[in-house]
Amino acid sequence: MSLNGFEDAGAWGVSEDITSGDTVKAAVKKEQVIKDFVAAQDDLRIMMSKVQVVKKDIEKLKSGNETLQTYIDNLARQIAKR
Image 1 (tube, helix red, strand yellow):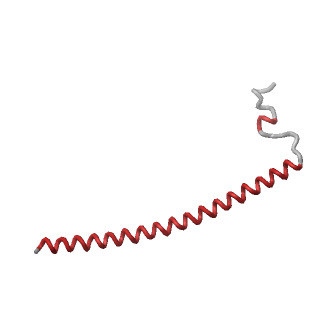
Image 2 (cartoon, rainbow, N blue to C red):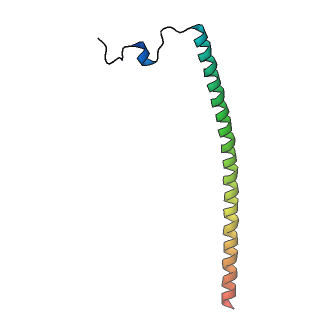
Image 3 (cartoon, rainbow, N blue to C red):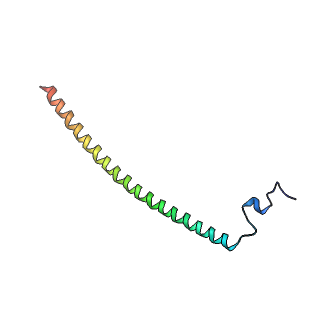
């Protein structure tokens, strides 16, 4: 009795007649996928490092802007007192 073809080996992506050539091709393809994945991880690490540097630069600029704003506010108060 078949449950809508679910018991067939082909329904599960299993091929019953796998040749050694197919196995080699699958292994080579798997190896390439792993290499691509590792390369993508390395690229992601580099990008994350750059993001951290930019975040630090932004924090420095924010701090500088706050200092300048305080200076401007103080000058404006001094001018208003005159």
